[in-house]
Image 1 (cartoon, rainbow, N blue to C red):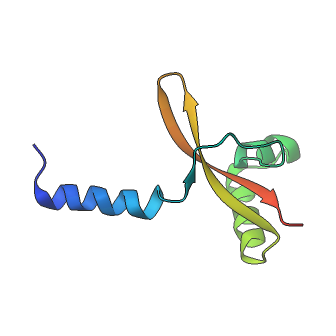
Image 2: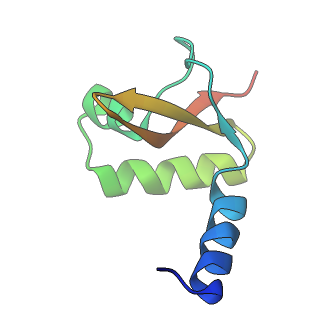
Image 3: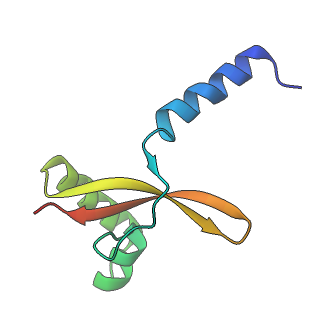
Length: 83
């Protein structure tokens, strides 16, 4: 049985990370970090650094989508260029 502290912590984590999750299906203009890794044949860490830089410059935007795989769902960040 969880105590009040762990339940409050769980609620805080949900509020911080799950409130901005979109339950829609991402369109073809959205891509994941793994899509970038495969397309440009670079490492995941290099792709993540580039994505962070581009987000800070306002050249791409990030949105979290809930993706259902088998019996579980995961929140996966997706990115798209800003036009």
